[in-house]
Image (cartoon, rainbow, N blue to C red; front, side, top):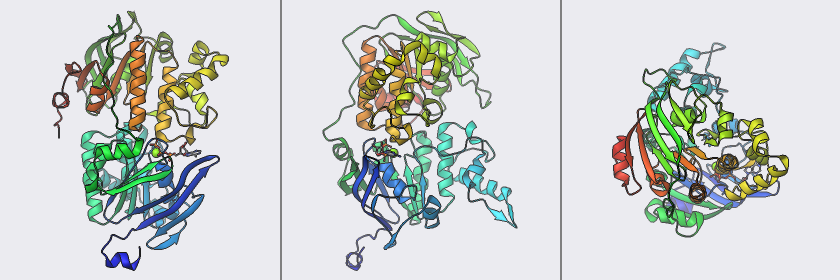
Length: 511
Ligand SMILES: Nc1ncnc2c1ncn2[C@@H]1O[C@H](COP(=O)(O)OP(=O)(O)OP(=O)(O)O)[C@@H](O)[C@H]1O
Ligand SMILES: [Mg+2]
């Protein structure tokens, strides 16, 4: 920034991007973007799936090189040859997709590539101490020696955050850090963000939870189709402003489908008990009973740890049950394998698309046609003649932004990968579809598309069970809302319930 700006008391950016262009083959991900970040402030970057947010952040943090354009750090032109290079200059990034090694401990993940060495040896004790201190700062009760693979997704995300914090950067980029965090974990993160900005750290924050992001925003920037469409200070904007610049017109997530009667009971869960893997002594799902009719959309709301994921995993056959029965169209499937359940018409869109949802080394098309228990489903449902058209339909149905079925899955933006998972499950023609936090990482427009798709399927007689930690989602789609807590159903509501009632039932305060 010029001396003039300084004299006029305008903030001076610590890092600026000028006219950044990024092409991936024929895809123009960024079309000449200017972007500034300032010390001690939070700049929030909004935009639809595939708008170019992660791409811009990868360029700022040395992961990717721009095709064209310039980076200016502390007033001087720089090029980053690698993430290590950028990190050495004080820039670190929390990636949208978790980049941890599941077999390594929390401690080793945090210090990987930056081991603390004393007298020629790695000082593991000191690393563990610092890792424990970071966990304490993030108010997460995790032993630093726990293998990361044993943690739930939200906790893995906390480790990812801890790793970025451990570097003491001047510039910290957070690409969807909260997508798998609970409300209380997000609160802690926001406290940490405030501490960091108080110390002068510049933060870039990306989230599809627009209201939540607004809470910490100082500057808001909106990207659309690889170009910047708006930039404002917090006091000048509100939620409709963001949505308008992201997607155009005014937006409504809709309401539960009406005008038809439900069919027979499609899914019946009887006294289901699932043991808790982390051995807290309490069952993850505790003697739970639930019936869902064909055509009905049931939302399961609950805080993190309420047992929603464990319930859905057990229904899909991904984990052992201790007691109880699961009936699909009246037939007991509790002893069936995952593949048999899919064949019978029950499928799950899992919470963790990285682990359970997608094969990163394959194309979009293969991922779509290979439902996770691959061969079986493929032989059963899709002849190769049909495969192509189903893939094309799925891409169109869920509006995946891609070059086509032959693009590699890794080349898709995070939200578009999530849409592939959803499209893939839809293509198995389920009678009952279970979705675990499916809107994680997808933009408000895509969310509306997914809701529409689910509503259409429900009208055709599919039973939908939708787990979410967002109350507004329940109200936009559910015929019935079930609140879970500690492995049990603690409340049940019709669609006319208020947001406050749902939150109160879950033991959460509405503010
Ligand atoms: N390695 C790659 N190869 C080819 N295309 C890519 C690659 N990485 C990103 N793209 C494309 O660039 C565009 C921007 O992607 P980007 O990941 O930056 O989006 P995003 O704004 O972060 O979206 P989301 O909200 O879904 O995370 C997309 O069209 C994407 O498919
Ligand atoms: Mg992204």
